[in-house]
Image (cartoon, rainbow, N blue to C red; front, top):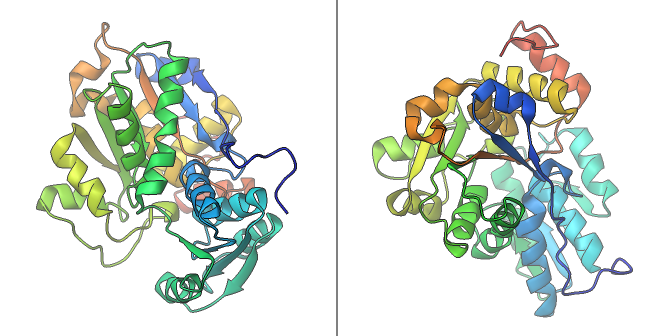
Length: 334
């Protein structure tokens, strides 16, 4: 049954805080605001787009959602289905950690394990979604998903009281978040605000596509930032690089592990390495200065970083990643 008090017209996402980060502003030497999507009830920004898609499907008579994501999209699908009173099935490959299977099931979804890789799980999900009354939930490549994510920029504009940012920084995997932010920028009249697209080495399909001037497919995802693990960026995300100022940069896994430890110290929030890619641009002033020095000029507006969040992180995992790179677990030096 639908959650009591949640009307069909209510968005399933929260209007998340836009926090002026004093410690990160000090690191960057410029005002930094954090859009805290880690505070969403499903753990990440994904609920904006997938919640919108689910509500549209419900309004058209669908009563079942089917997802093939063992990560944040699966969490969002499970939460959306719970709120909308729709049966949700999440098909995950055998490689999905038990922790994520349990978290998705904990939100009320039916979790099925199928295949050794995501492609096999996705094939079954699409077969199930072809049944009457079912809606397939794409993790990032959908206009409805982008439309839902665009709401983030509306909130940013409202909370900044019209003050225009010098840039919005996002992490990029398949490009769903970036596409949604770009849609939002154009909707609110901020078409001249650059987007800084941050990726990690080994999950950098957008950066490689920009260099090749065409979409490319990675042989494999070798980064620990598995939530950025799309081998090919969405076609629309690549098209946006021709239509809007997008500044692409790639950081190492070691750098993002340092950053998410520092962020936990500074703001007492755990985020995945995927989220650390965006945060890295704010903790290291050399990145934005190299991309475009005008972003940090005294007269420029604040830098807004989308803290996209993520459910695939624990204290134990944070310490494990630190050990992988021989880092002090307190990560004092970034």
